[in-house]
Length: 288
Image (cartoon, rainbow, N blue to C red; front, side):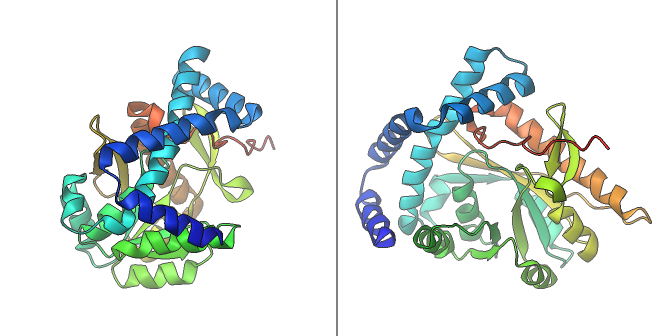
């Protein structure tokens, strides 16, 4: 029932003019803000204050803008059925294609390291519609109806979705030369590698580093940001390579720290676009 309800909503949103969709998305975000738990807001504001070295009022403004943007993102996802290879060019520009083309020229695929900043859902669409056989690595949703909807809409562009547990599939796709997108900005729990992030140790997923080292594939940082007029800009960075020394753990730590530093640099440029409501520093640094 939920699946068909959201699909019906998508049909309505798809025929709305761009300006109406954007304003409606902002309104939805504003209406949802009061319902976000106070404790979660307080955590996000505190992390923004510490990381950006700003006062509480400035941090609260950034966190609120970040949260409200989800309404606009939701409306843009509902509009995915209308996107195609031609009209997306006026909606999303891609800078740094030469870096990804170079990375893929070696025939080993590539790990695209991204972040939950800007409209990351549109990023996948732009890459797939832009001519790349893009693979997105997703977290399976607990709600089966919403998981079905999200996967279906992500794959409308020709993008392929695999889940975080599908390591064997990722290895096979890398072997075929496919670029695989992984998010590098969320708490990775006890299994993560602790690296510096905004001056504090943060548990970080090492999957990209492990796969890149195993398959000798490049890692390419890729981000998306929103322009003033509501269009989007994808920025592709030069490829990074994982050293392959006898110190495997050190190799993985070094490249994970490099990627995390690039993620931090992007967030500092667009702090109101990052997902501050996620507790990035949830896992405490082990004292022993």
